[in-house]
Amino acid sequence: MIWTFVNNTFEPEEKATLQTGDLALQRGYAVFDYFRTVDHVPLFLEDYLDRFFHSAQTLFITIPHTRSQVRAIIAELIKKNNLPESGIRMIATGGYSPDSYTPVQGNLILQQQPLQLPDMARFERGIRIMTYAYQRDLPAVKSINYLMGIWLQKQLTEKGLDDVLYVQNDLISEFPRANIFIITNGGTLVTPAHNVLAGITRKKILEFAGALLPVETRDISVAELKNAAEVFMTSTTKRILPVTEIDGIRIGSGTAGPLTRQLQEQFIRLQESVTTAPYSRA
Amino acid sequence: MIWTFVNNTFEPEEKATLQTGDLALQRGYAVFDYFRTVDHVPLFLEDYLDRFFHSAQTLFITIPHTRSQVRAIIAELIKKNNLPESGIRMIATGGYSPDSYTPVQGNLILQQQPLQLPDMARFERGIRIMTYAYQRDLPAVKSINYLMGIWLQKQLTEKGLDDVLYVQNDLISEFPRANIFIITNGGTLVTPAHNVLAGITRKKILEFAGALLPVETRDISVAELKNAAEVFMTSTTKRILPVTEIDGIRIGSGTAGPLTRQLQEQFIRLQESVTTAPYSRA
Image 1 (tube, chains in turn red, brown):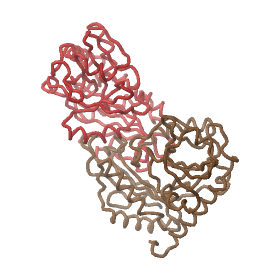
Image 2 (tube, rainbow over the protein chains, first blue to last red):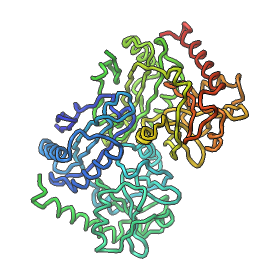
Image 3 (tube, rainbow over the protein chains, first blue to last red):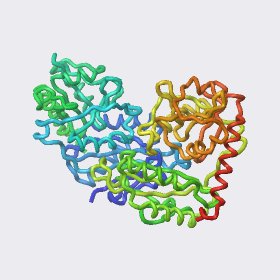
Image 4 (tube, chains in turn blue, purple):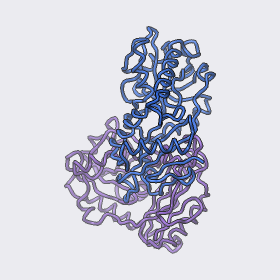
């Protein structure tokens, strides 16, 4: 049985519920965050907690627990569920609003699910994507608004593509659930600076990549993207995943590029260094 | 006690719940609609059902009941709750999606609440609004995405304003929960043609107003809005409500204008004609 935490109690997953008056259900008004566990250890937990509490504050959502209480609930959830490799989702909603519009005391949900990362074959093959004109609302906030991303899934399926990259005024921003990086023909790593969610995987790469190659965060045009030597997406569930085709145009050699490989190896080393350190075990 | 219908059963309001895995909670992915009852009779029900089922279809949401079943559930809800003047909300969600992203069989919620319309003093005084650069996603669909509208409430409160009108590229579109009409200095009624939700109150006004004054649906610039003789909003819960100040600029005489009054009277006559007709009683 998998346990889910709702407000003050652990419930079996299928008994974890919210009243239909909650502002997430009435108005899609909630924030969330999502991190991995590696061998029972939460990866980069403090970064995710930073972002979760920041998202809530920006949307005037009151999380009914302190940060240290949330940390303790996570530890208990990991113990109860005993799922070594997992994803943990934290959701804080606008609460049971009497007028179905004004945020009140929020409701907190913590859910854990088994998680499998993309395998090496997937990494080698990379993914095929299309661009689409759209800009996420309040991009610095990890809200639950995925209306456009989910609505576009049907088009992706019909076209046999893996994902969609949002562009606006000829500048690229992000995927519905991931950031994007390019490696220019000159060998510089670049990721969009504006109108994107500050991904935790993105953050870690920006921290360590400077030792391997020059790094820039700035605007990237669609033309520069399509002319890049290598392109990859980053996210908690994907880590680093090469993008090998964009709007029908092949990127680089059409498989995972050499610098992308190096960054992936480096990221896995970083992950191993923090999850095997004894002090970070639950 | 107020009853809420969830999927197959009527539950007391506070026991009406969905599992936390529902796509509305996970990803804000759901559609809804909202109509009034007048002396126990649903007002313009078929129009609202048209829009509700159309919204669901556009978002690939499968409502687990047919249209005639939904109609029968509404009749039973009205009978059980005995709230003569009310609002009824229908929500259809993306369902309990195993991957928290792909819509599956939807969950259906029908909720009824007492509803009070704005009083005459409110109508006379009108409302004060600001404009804000934003365009709703998939505007023809009544989705639950109110991220921007709710986030802006704090600014409205701080400025002592009543609502916000979305504008994009110098053209006006709609309020978060209402349509907008202007009456030009030449005496023509105009409402934006594009990028708005097709409001039912808007629709009814467009149907009957031609007998009173010339009517156009077309683009409206911010400058034309602010120079209009009269401006009003329309919605299910507001009917017609004068807008008397926009971004600090007084509109017309600063109170409800003469043509707005005539349209409001006409709308109330229409409402009375359909809710007192014996065939439309439950």
